[in-house]
Amino acid sequence: MKRITRKQRQRHVLLNIAKRKQARCVTYRKSGIQSPPRRENVNQWIDSKRREGLQLSIDGKKRVTIILPERMNFSDMYESTALHINAIRKLAERPYIPSRSYKLASVNFDNLEHISTSAALVLTAELSKWDDAIRQRLRPNIDGWDCNILKQLSQLGFFDLFKNNPLSEYGVDEELCEQSGLSLVKYIKGQCGDKAKTRILKNEINTIVGENISKWTFLDSGLSEAITNVSHHAYPDDYGVPQQDKNWYLTGSYNMETKVLKIVFYDQGIGIPKSLPASELWERVLAWFSRYSVIDKMKHEVLLKAAVELDRTSTFESDRGKGLQDLLEFIKQRNNGYLSILSLKGLYKYSIDNGRERTKTEGFNNEIPGTLIIWNVALDA
Image (cartoon, rainbow, N blue to C red; front, side, top):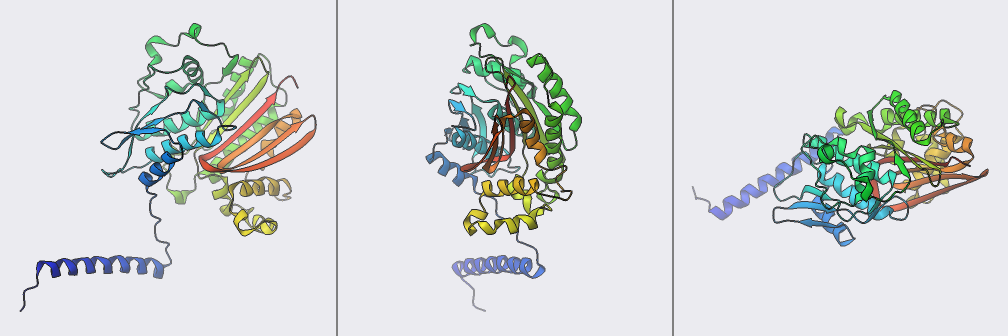
């Protein structure tokens, strides 16, 4: 028998490996099971987004520090805000990190000078998710933080997330901070079905405003609907989300100078555009799509608009609780303000000014990893 060379042996091994991979693919196709999707290459995503403006530093051990921008909000700074929050999610959510992969080491707040209530809630939620994943080992380094950011996030309850709370000893010297007139409600964290926690928000809002909010029943109904949607749609069983990660977050703020009340709700689920195909509305959505091109049908802002407008004309009991119209009713009853629904890369905004109604949709390059709902009203209107 002729002895094979080492080179021939290596060639045979490679051929056998290739045949095994091919056999696995055939098995999936024959059984009707869809082959598991490949995990996104986070390193490539980070490198590409870095060229687009993602601020970060990477050390020799592939440890990444996300550097937050000076301003964060979901209006005129949407793309930058969503980009940095999405980077935190992608780096923090991986259960197993190969040695050559980037690893989230820290988030640097030193450059941050202004953050909206909604952006603060989403950022808090994403850092809470990261802290849960590493068993509450995070500790904020606040030495270089802007005083007003420190005060705002302290009011929000941001530092209560951490077992190692850096404010537990010293607190915030508010005399060094600007007096903005903005008061925040400490964020509320809940899970599917925790509707009773909306009462906590109502009591806190009444405290900072100094009076009961008229038409609150309609807002409470909208919040209950948002929580119902989390239970039914945000975390489908086939996505394998652990029960402890099926959370929603809620807060509110009141500006005593402008008399503007803002209520913000956020879940970290799959997003309304992705949940629609499993909804009872989906057949009607497909019919409604006839007015759009093939490309437009897949846009997240179009899917959001379809979800709201079809729900508005629905004559049967939807599987989305009382319907998305509950989210709009508080604004309609106040006759002044707006409701924004941001989910993945889409925005649906309804506004009303002295009875004049307007709707707006917009698509973005960067996504919010979940669904964000914002109610905004002027109380002296």
